Image (cartoon, rainbow, N blue to C red; front, side):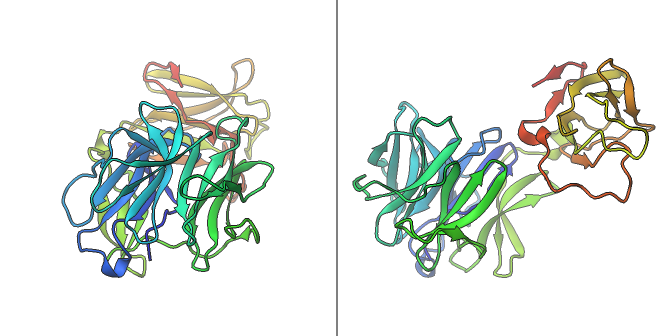
Length: 377
């Protein structure tokens, strides 16, 4: 099996990771010292295929940090390999350029990347088809940034450029090839994300429910992204065939949970209560023993999402338009460093389960409440 891009996007100690490909030729003949390529993007980068980052190489079995084989290039989406595993492909641009292009470089003996062709709009996540043609995600010209992208198939020299998905909205991004030769892609329309499949000529589009192909190491083990609760981050992990973790391959260097001094609080609906009506709640106030840390607006659906100092008792109060307390806590709550704590409502019935929807407050980063009481973005 040749290396293919994975669907997972992992947050890794302040960065995002788009898992990439396994170095070398098919797994049964890969040398013992193989490598994983992945794209490291800023944690606050937009969650779209066109988030740009660095392409890194992590050598398996070598005690060293990942390295950047081609400095000066930014990469969007996922990198992938040719069917023989000899070439690496990605969409992106040189740091000094504004044009988006499809690039390739040999894996075994890295040299200066070669531009295959230039694309007029942002592109991401190319995959090589069994026919030798390439499919990738391309932004629709004239659409707001990050709002629309379709799958496009072309020859390696950029000729015979053909669109193969035709949804009216949303973002389509190729993630792997199925064993029967279909393009597996991730489709996001608003808050809805689906995994789908389509023939390379654009026919037979359908939802896809089976497992995705995963990168394999020479020993048959898999590479995946896993949460590391004790480190408050995610890591690249080697797993056995049954999915049991064996070894952490990479975790962002220097990330130490004991150096983190803050956590987050998420409430799904602050107006949901078993007591008197809280319909008039419009703002949240957070205070501790030293005073008020800050106030934030409550979203239209009643949700809020705030970043607060760790290791101290916090009192949360909802306020009406006049600044009067609607609901308040009788005793404090706290977060540990890097803890993400959530609740359903404000004194909600204890038997209540959360509604199955995405709260409006998580549509943007948590509002940071400063030590002084000032609110920062």
